[in-house]
Length: 117
Image (cartoon, rainbow, N blue to C red; front, side, top):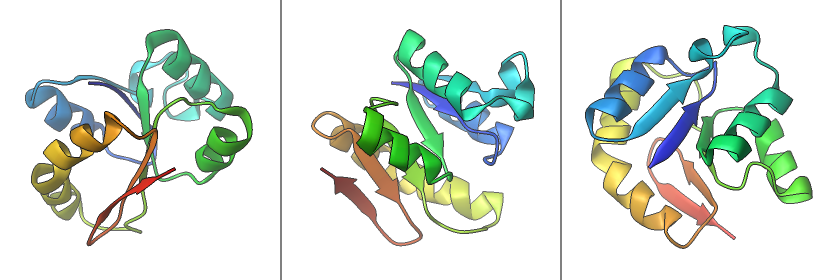
């Protein structure tokens, strides 16, 4: 899958997801790095057909109102250690991939993966 990791998530998440076979960019890879605007993230996700991975609920609003981004992975874990975040991804990435086959908004919290319609 093709992902775009938002700035509030660690760059090492890009490395982790790339290491398990996904095509991933992080906002730090873009020209404005951590100052990349939400609109630019939406544009890149549309132009490059990428699923946005974010903690930012503004993307949920634009997803429902404008249909942009087309696919969104919302991380609603609150502030957690990176080791726990990677553990959640390790344990759930296969389920996340399967859910994106039939859903456009998937949410991961500390205990569950939720597909939203």
